[in-house]
Length: 250
Image (cartoon, rainbow, N blue to C red; front, side, top):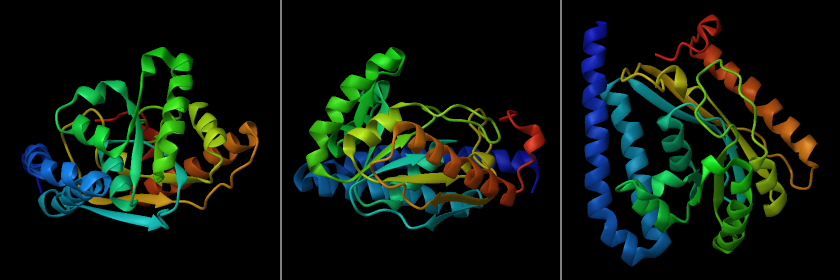
């Protein structure tokens, strides 16, 4: 397959993905409003599964979930490389809600369902000052239960690039007093941050063994990074990623 043809298929996939978002979100609103959170989650899962399925036959990018996705009330702390890991993680858990950047609240379609599903917006520009309101919002939403998902490095990180883990994950872990399930991924190998090209292959997210509640902040953060980074590196190696090109996210 020529590079030009791969770009054409990528543009077709991206176009239909956003068209499907508008269509499914609009048609699903009655289900979301009448069905409450259960209806909202059903619409969101339908869309996430559509993206994964359409990626397989349009661009040749298959998706696979490894490990055991949690079904109980836990904190999910994940590696974040592209939009696809957001989709795959959400599709895998039954009652997910994201810690998300505040700007997404005003995004058409995405913002509607984020609000209806109980996602928690955070003003990342305020940095440390944003932690207190985030924790307050988490406490208010705790009674609803589910899997609270956070990207522990705070942003998308290109394959092979090292970036520190943010303390916000440890604050949530301490506040919730719940187990934490780490998630590794290799999706950035096939779905780069700064390119329209989507590459064929096998995109994987892997739910790793839970970290039990009650650890100290220092111990927890060491366990979290020590679980996610080697597992993600192994998945990227499996996908054929050349670590000598780390940071060239094209």
